[in-house]
Length: 328
DNA sequence: CGTCCACGTCTAC
DNA sequence: TAGACCTGGACGG
Image (cartoon, rainbow, N blue to C red):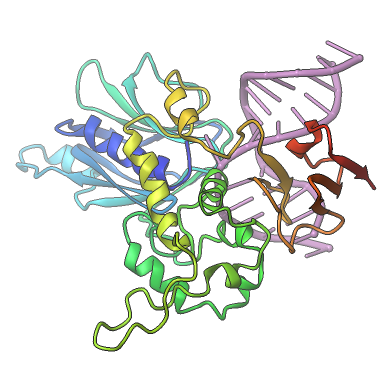
């Protein structure tokens, strides 16, 4: 599932499936989960969802009780509760019958129906988490998709931050500034502009300060690139959202082909990939850029590509007849 | 059987 | 800047 678009599609899914469904009783947890218990029990409540970057917040809203059942009332919660979810590498929501509950359904909300249906948070690898009475994580920036102006401001006013000394491809994964960007999105975004992944982030982002500067003065600075990197951090994820419900990144899903067809760079045949300084695979085409991990160099001359690289590096050019490759 | 790889954080030396 | 945290699919012997 899970980069910004998948988290948002998950919130859309919850709102669609749970609209008009009354939930009841306690929120239950799998035996194996180490995430916290959710101290919420209610005779009748509704569930809604909203996303921000790489987080989803569920709101449990108790329905007004008529007060006729005092015994049930005593044990139950009558205040709404927010639960904030992070999806790790494999989290998603699904709404099924009790019988169809998938493996690794770690948190479960039961409907009042008979037979009951269940909204469950499924997370195979358990890198995901939830926080009862949670709020948006304070270290994460505005949402790249749905808080675009704030997101842009947060970056341009902090370009002097040492964080932007790093290569652009690594900074794009910094959730303090790019809440919602993940590994496939950074590849797709940089590919659209043909920005080498290992150029300094500050260099790649310079020239964007003026976009919403005053209309009263003469044009101050104009963009140095025709495509705008920050704008693409907004529009490229929205393209995935617009593929529609259930169409995000999930290779295990039947309907994966639309997403696969949308990818232009990530995992695409003919693209290059190298590990970044954090060990994550960066997919790109053309030059890696000057800040590529140590031990790696790459250049082309007279149509001959010469590359010195780590054995774990994969360059598509190695299939080309005129490439000379040296492993050190 | 084994090794490598995967959409992401986290904390600890 | 490593690892730790997890499961499981692909692929090699």
